[in-house]
Length: 93
Ligand SMILES: [Zn+2]
Image (cartoon, rainbow, N blue to C red; front, side, top):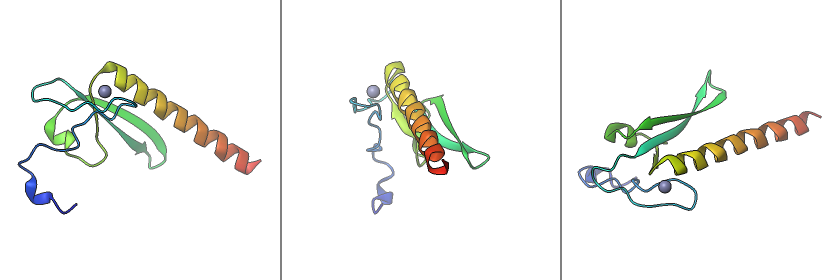
């Protein structure tokens, strides 16, 4: 994180986070943003909102080029949550 002085440059993170995608965002394209947060500090929540530059600049925001990639990321999120729950249960048993 030594390049904070280059804030006028296009954000290099504007590359789709969708699995097997990775396209670069062009100026003016209607993209989406997704991020993971924790409700009550422990329940994972996947959030989605239309592209806003100031939201995109926030830590943990995932650029998403469209519906298909949003669905893939949602599917990945759901899979991860289920796997973690199964693992947590198997540790208790
Ligand atoms: Zn994509």
